[in-house]
Length: 304
Ligand code: F2R
Ligand code: MG
Ligand code: MG
Image (cartoon, rainbow, N blue to C red; front, side):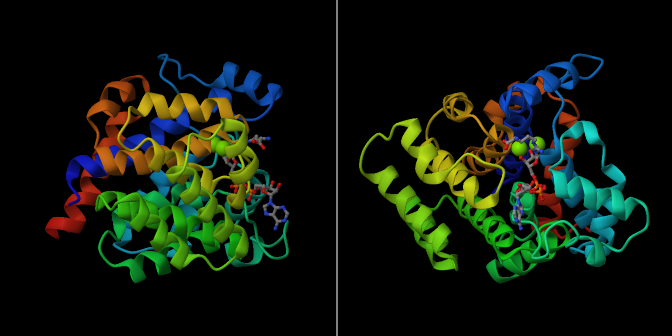
């Protein structure tokens, strides 16, 4: 059964995973840059684009009681700051929207088929909080949220898998049932193969981190990171959050986003108690907790 504690855990897991993972993301240059800009003036850990877009999505949903694409696109653009470390085509798109371009005309400027970066997947756990019980509505709204920035089918499919895994974690489904649900949702061979590998890796034996990286990926594209995050969240669902993070840090590559997506799913299983202590060193943690609580009350008590 879902609860207010699980909602808080999910949002805090997303933000804590992002902020704690950010110093390990990318190559040497990116890590050096983050060393310089990764803390606020009062010494709190800054979050990156992953959490900023999740906050935008939650606030836009609370404002409209729905996913309104034009409002959400405007919100993403208003919050854009280069120092949050957005992906290249998302940066370009948000700057165009800020200048007054319609997102429908701008989101295929860099890639004709749209982006398959993991930017839509990293905010998808929020949609599981907005649509906790109706899976069809969840999937339709994941598509609406993704289309703005990540119109490529692989970008949308990755976001659907993360949203479904989060919804299943709120319901405490067993790993096997979760993976069956995900497999049923997969349309492309690349995700099918990865979910199948994930199921084997969870069942059979201890896999080396190198093998996980080779088979599931650790990159900035959705097919290279979504199933990786799902694997870690399922493997560590009954263990400490810190144990999961330390494994993800050793992966390298897109660490903040893999930790953020895995953190959200882990938090949806386990709630907020461990994360509340960690989130004391995170910027805006009270606002994030408030958003999670408000999303819960909106969905479960029809307060608005
Ligand atoms: N920007 C960063 N990190 C910078 C360092 C990353 C490092 N070099 C690494 O590889 O690990 N982090 C933030 O960006 C990611 C989210 O990105 P988003 O919003 O999906 O960006 P974008 O630009 O849309 O896509 C990312 C890249 O994917 C490839 N790609 C996407 N669509 C493609 C297509 N249709 N054809 C070919 N390539 C495509 C491109 O390389 C894009 O640049 C998160 O990690 C967040 O933390
Ligand atoms: Mg990021
Ligand atoms: Mg990232």
